[in-house]
Length: 190
Image 1: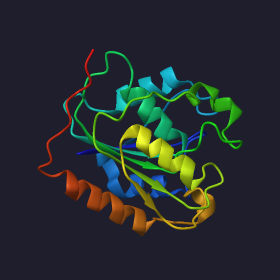
Image 2: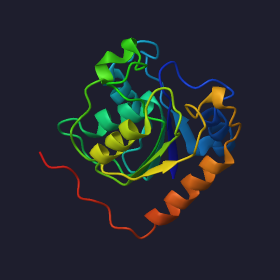
Image 3: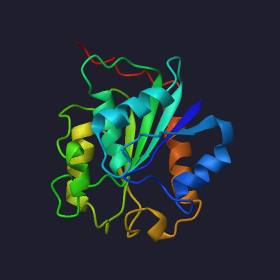
């Protein structure tokens, strides 16, 4: 299985749990590398996902912040075909209608109105400065996935001082276990 790390705007620094997980997973992990980290362009981020997700699968997407929106945009593109994505763990998606949504990420402000074509899980914090619990619930409902709250932990990023974030690793392990033997939803139609 390939673990596809999808950071948010400007990428994830060395102290971020995504970077720690990438180091621990070694060659099983790959991080997207769009050219528009600071001024995110949905087409560029989708192309970066295309380069990282193997056509023959299986892969698990592990997204943080704006990376969650990149995953939603990528899989809702017209003509998208299932490359073997088993599921997506979407951590701390920001509210595109909220006052803290980055102006530089305006291309991601309009979300596709479609559930994800694979199982997913939103992991959130009750005091995330980028999304209220109600906004997070709305995002998850639109994507057709459940939400798990981590309590009060900020944006679940480096500033949250999560380190390797063992609680997050446990959630991913449980999510993966729930995928075994589960029929996959049908691929989206034309």
